[in-house]
Image (tube, rainbow, N blue to C red):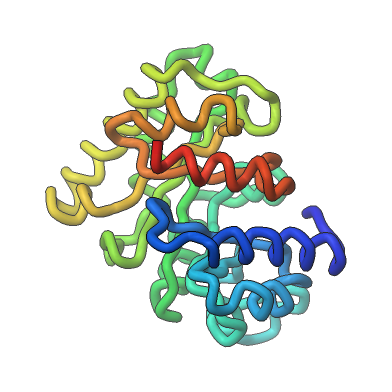
Length: 241
């Protein structure tokens, strides 16, 4: 929940200009602005190869849900991705795995790609329950119709978001490898190998290259660092190093 129109326009224009200067980028870039900025930013990044997404949606296609936005509405705005199950939605709004699952189904039905977030709290990690939590959230949040074409998984340890703290590279790889193995068991090797696994806990220019070099880390779900074009771009460029 950051950015008014002028801020969003400036950030989007900066990134679009940088992207247009790339002849063969080694990365895909996605921006998911607040609902109020989606239309304007969509116009700004048009033709730049930057994808557009949203930060959440309602599970229903339409109806008496004042204040909510459907996946179909987001598709109509030009979005191709929607984030669901972000830890802040789970914490601030009490969203359950079942609700995240239903939202992801609605995203798929609208022809969009669901970025499904999972991750443990600090207490759960301290209690050595990280893999148990991740396993349960995957089982509950990922719809049966998930494929490499319509689903991205983002691992975001809640205790690392915006705190400057990160797990060790070994801990990140352990969880990502576990996620891959769980997806393999439910979706099969081909689909599981194709699903992008993003890391989303205080990734920044200083640690992006090491994190992105890990075997099962396919990208990043960037929070605070995405608010500065220079930092966001530096993380993206780390994919090529």
